[in-house]
Image 1 (cartoon, rainbow, N blue to C red):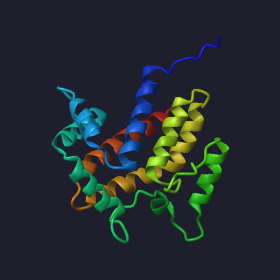
Image 2 (cartoon, rainbow, N blue to C red):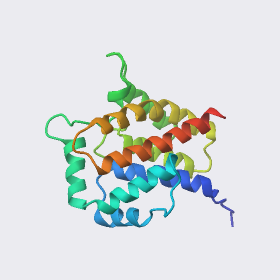
Image 3 (tube, rainbow, N blue to C red):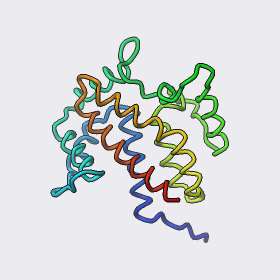
Length: 197
């Protein structure tokens, strides 16, 4: 029998943060997920950082109604015509018209042995897909931190800040502002940790 090492708790936490954020940006949460998040509030949250962002998300989930959150998601990120806020990161990274980040991303994913599922409807540069790639890279213990860093610093970090700023400036958002704040806190912590490698 082959021994399969388990992930250290801090790596499980990292993977879980990415997994949850991917889920919340892929589709609006159902009532069960909202109630689970609401029940996860820390009684004495730390000021600032991930602890405060998590408490804010838990509080927002406790006040949220699943139908209203679905409407918020669809209005902000799907919209009729052009959505007020796009979740496709190429929109935040293209500086010149001859850049083709999606083609480059597909090449990187292929190099990692990953690809788009045949039933997937979203392009690979959707923030939920990128966050899920990070979850996978952390969970798959064969991946080195340098590989995680390279993916994060190229595909997530430069795009998270303008995406979160766009969500903060958007009108009519309540729940997803707390999601964006948690995303920004998680990614800021990751960026600082990767800088120390």
